[in-house]
Image 1 (cartoon, rainbow, N blue to C red):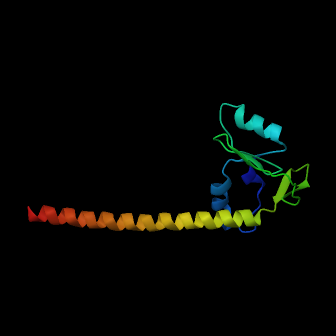
Image 2: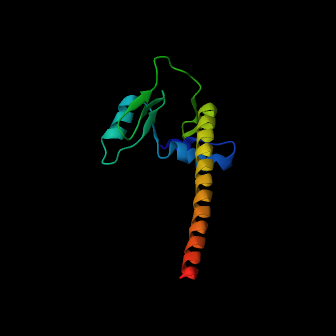
Image 3: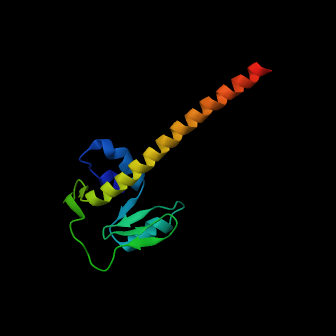
Amino acid sequence: PRLFDLIIPSNFSVTPALFLAVGNTLVAPDMDTATRWAYESSKRWRVVTLNGNLIETTGTMSGGGKTARSGGMRIANSRTKSVALALEDNVESHLERIEGEAQQAQNLLQECRKRRLDIKSEIRALIKSK
């Protein structure tokens, strides 16, 4: 399953930011499955294991560590495969980073729009002066 489909946000207004952060990341039960999903298909996938190991689409692996931490993911009901994720710290830091990037993009967009208006004014002035 996709990680995004397993996350149930307490505030649905953050859903676009969540998707931007996790995208089409797949969740695998173990590293063998994660490796198979990441490398053995015609498309490269970003895959995270239940232990926190991460395989990026570039092939780099990270995370996991030697000590297992419990409570990060809990299976609420195996029949419905609904999973509640306790990723608030991670999600909040990703959300803050994404909000900062969005604000920078908004500022750049405003600057570009202002510059475009200035250029249009300059063009009009040049046309009038001919």
